[in-house]
Image 1 (cartoon, one colour):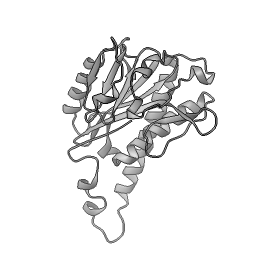
Image 2 (cartoon, rainbow, N blue to C red):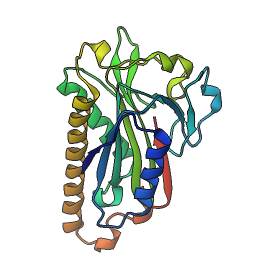
Image 3 (cartoon, one colour):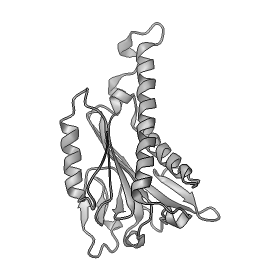
Image 4 (cartoon, rainbow, N blue to C red):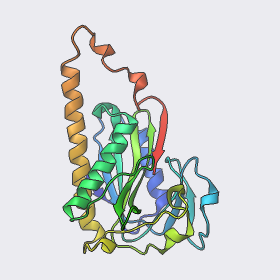
Length: 242
């Protein structure tokens, strides 16, 4: 299910609702994608260092439980909160991060923007001349008992000035960019709809693949030993970003 939250969405309230939804999940609970534009806010990850908050000014800061360091959310940016059961989809943490990045890259491609990953720095980037890469989308996740929350934030057409008040994602001097600066005329709602469809399609493919593996275990191995649950993102807690 894809749901748009009322704008501007208060970050702390949405975070509380994500945790409550995840805590109440059952094995058959459908996955959901929540889309929104936030009121201006800096968010600091679970292990984030306040040293990366250079000059927050009057923008509020929320210390949350996702992975990664510090980022900014505000009007003109679409955030997709992906409330996915990773066990059902057969996804490890690294595979899930790749799914989020792939869906974002596909969304940008549909708008004529070529983008890429950056080794060792999760998120999605676009080339800005020479070898410089500017970040256009940040991600952060939390996994509790095999179920993910938080998600991906894509800069569509926004005031990028607040990024000057931080080391974005913990990287000093990291340049940020939005789709408008890449020549795309589109609003967060239109872009969000495309992003949600790409995310939902990627999740559906992962679930289909997991079901196919479960139906055809490797010869000579009992089904319970095909992929050990303890090796999955599903045990306990995990974070990743940005």
